[in-house]
Image (cartoon, rainbow, N blue to C red):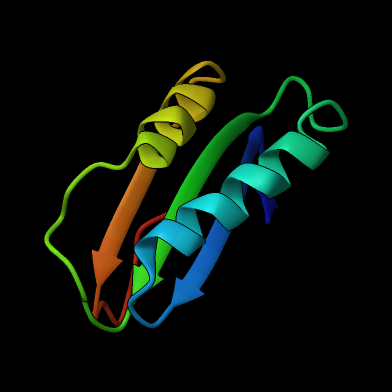
Length: 84
């Protein structure tokens, strides 16, 4: 989703946070050059948490990728409304 100068990468998942992070990473890697100049924002919305909230290597890598553009990653569980 593009809004102003922000590009939002949104992933809806049941409980697989690791897979959600990997999917957003792949999308950012594929579209990053086409969207240069945009601030990348990652949003993961989960219906439940299967494991403790531990930062995986992939999650840390994704957060760094997004920060390089001025963006961030937010992970929410069971939210009816998420601020973008």
